[in-house]
Structures are given as structure tokens and as C-alpha cells.
Length: 126
Image (cartoon, rainbow, N blue to C red):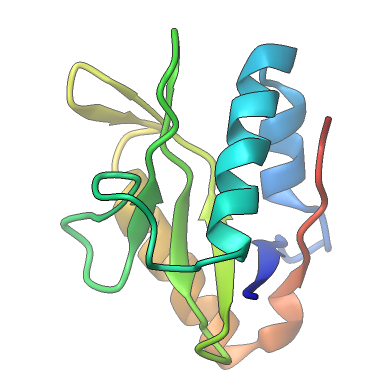
């Protein structure tokens, strides 16, 4: 089992939770199903479910649907038996929304490495 964490901003606001709250119920259900899969086998997911990005060490979870969800995450960043969700993103026409989401996720990963309190246990949104 892997433990999931969410990135929090400097004020303690859970950005992943806020992003998930803005999704439609059907999208949240698909996201939760993929996150459940991620927590059980970790990085041994089916091919093309958890894939790399141009930013080193940043992965995207591929959630297909009417809207292509691409939350960015990293393995760790404190322990190898955990994943930290760094930024909620979507993919439109092979482009991330928000733009450069993988680069922003990489910055957030570095923030967490320097300050582990900038994350919290994953909050599941139904």
C-alpha cells in the first residue's frame, strides 16, 4: 500500500482538494478510482495510466473521460512508499491546463523537499 498526500500552499490550503471540488461528480468518481488504484499497487499500474512528463521526477495520472484529467504527482518526496499529488491539471490538445503544469509541479516538489509540512494526507472528494 502507498500513502497519498496533497500539496498545500503557504496558507495551508489544500490545492488538490480545491481542484477536485471544481470537477463534475463523474470526473471526481473517475479520479477517485484511479487514485485507489495508485494507492494499492503504486507504480505497477497498467501501462499508460501513470506516465512521465517532460519535467524530471514528475508523473501524470491519466484519467480519461469527456475531460482528460492529468493530476501531476511525484513518488515520495519523503518516502518511497508514498505519492504526493502536486497540482491538478487537465489536458486539451496535448497541452496542459494550467500551462506548464509539470514545471509548476516540479517547483512544488522542491518546496515539499525543503519543507515537508507543505503537504497533508490526501482528502478524498466524492
